[in-house]
Image (cartoon, rainbow, N blue to C red; front, side):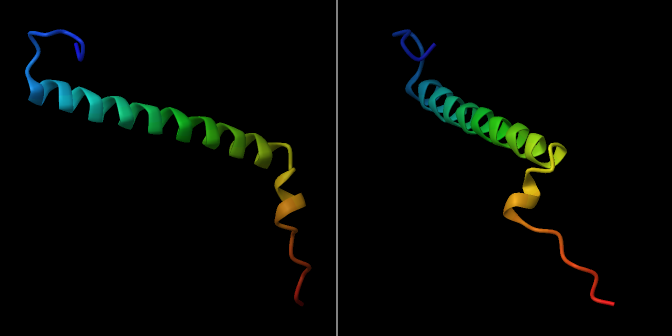
Length: 55
């Protein structure tokens, strides 16, 4: 679509913006999956230790 000469400039620009949004979403999805894995494996406590009971 972006490379098609018959596609309007507005459509090409919108497609480029959408492509960047998709790239960002995929990167965020990957990060979120790794974060969930870190929580499920309890590795998160290596970075944020549990607090001791204050009572």
